[in-house]
Length: 361
Image 1 (cartoon, helix red, strand yellow):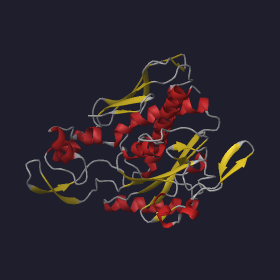
Image 2 (cartoon, rainbow, N blue to C red):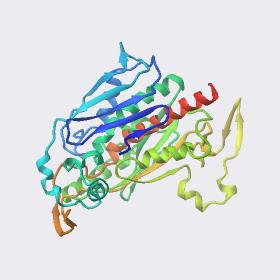
Image 3 (tube, rainbow, N blue to C red):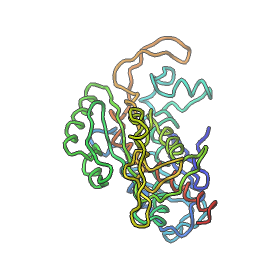
Image 4 (tube, rainbow, N blue to C red):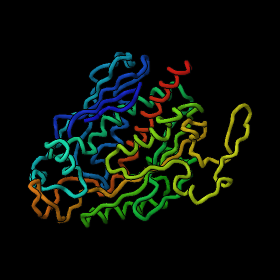
């Protein structure tokens, strides 16, 4: 079961949703990077359950423990192990799922592939696995900020169901995003989105949407031009997230409605810097960053667990009706925002180290 990500900045996540704990081992982190548990905890707090009335009520503090690789507040260059213990497991809520497959979950496919699965909370298929990604992403972010002046990734909720926020990627700030529990940057959409998510929870239903992300301060030159194109690795990172169903960068699918002349980004000089007048490429050309903001979007499906009866089958292939229980997000978008940012940091830290290894700078 592949649980590794990255080439030089490599991570391996571990643990099940209702096991003893979850975590990550990071290998390849450069030495002498300032790092504290609080650097990691800040990001885990943004991801954790129970943080607002519109997310799962599961109560987990998600306290990060650095087990290795850090001494006196600095990385050693050796593997960094981080663990978060689970404290609010409720296996009894999943008793019926021992035999009945939850629609659109990984229950059936895990059984089909492995012949065994962790039933409670979905095991490795649970979004709780992303704790390790977020913890590792916090470290990758520190690496990038130590080498790239002005580096930042700002993700935000762009749409929820049919509601669309009006956000300018050029000017959006993390403060705007974190000012509300939906994590959108359009003040006019905050209350309508909260009302929609609340209504879905009341109905025992769920909704999906789109997270948009802008990455600033990335110089030209990162990315490999064939199989490991920067946008290809970003796409893999985002599509590896639970509930993700689509990825587009720059103009994305809308670019198919333009002609080549309309779509091309004209070059010009800004002092000594090469710039483009438009950014339909989304900051990546030929699989390599061009120095402009990287802008992409990730589509997330409605949460698969809904608190209404659903038709399904058992592991004996008999038809049955499943009454879902448990504590789940009626919309994953608000908690997906820091996870998307974490995966950006991991991809870019890895490509930075690969670039330095190949080019020597």
